[in-house]
Length: 313
Image 1: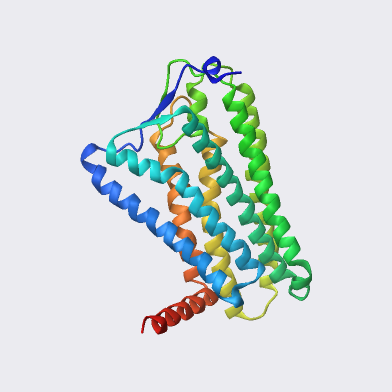
Image 2: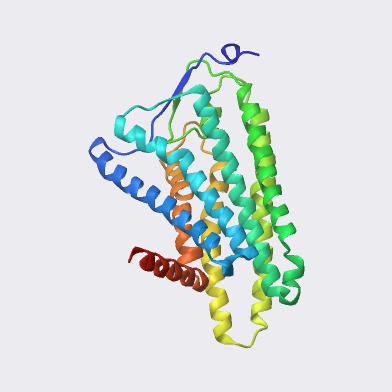
């Protein structure tokens, strides 16, 4: 069926962040700095893991994919938001809006599965250290990443195909800073009950189940750590788990709050702030939490700087 039979809307208007005109410049500089830090920080993670052979382990294999995903995830929404803030052009074509929604869902789901794979890797390393190399083989790590991509692709495609069948009659204003699925559904003049059912069903599969697996992994890790008599080892392990669980709580908490309990009508400012937390802030924290506080990554970073200093002489 041709698109003109599906919808009379050729473009959408994205209202953006609920900020005053005189604050546009300040927020533009802030989000630009955060975006550049996110991209450069995660690229540095990938570079360090690539160059240092000591980081060629399952943990850093997953971390490199998570870093690439975070770069892609934040690049789906932030550049368009920055351009709109600078040019005041808030329009986005119909096809561009659908594509943005697809990739947003894809990289959101991919983040979920990669975080789950990393939690499983830590579970095996701490709870079954003698069998770690046997269990976490290269083939298994590759399989976990490939399955994560396939599941994310399936989930995003399902939402996109269901959205493409809807009609958008007159309303084309999205009270958000990107083409959010929930916001798009409120603009449709078609029956969206199937879309909402799929959102809930797939939400359980790609959000709740991975989160449950992460929590179970860390409960088992915590039980194992408590059996170790070394207080120094316990504090170190709890510190690492606490940092990771903080990001997981922030990431999953905002997503579940938004998509399992969406606001009625248009998106509220609270929803927009929550979206910023997991689309901008969480990818920004990745280089700091998973790298700068890691001894191996610090050693690799120092080695890279020393090599660059020698080459520059």
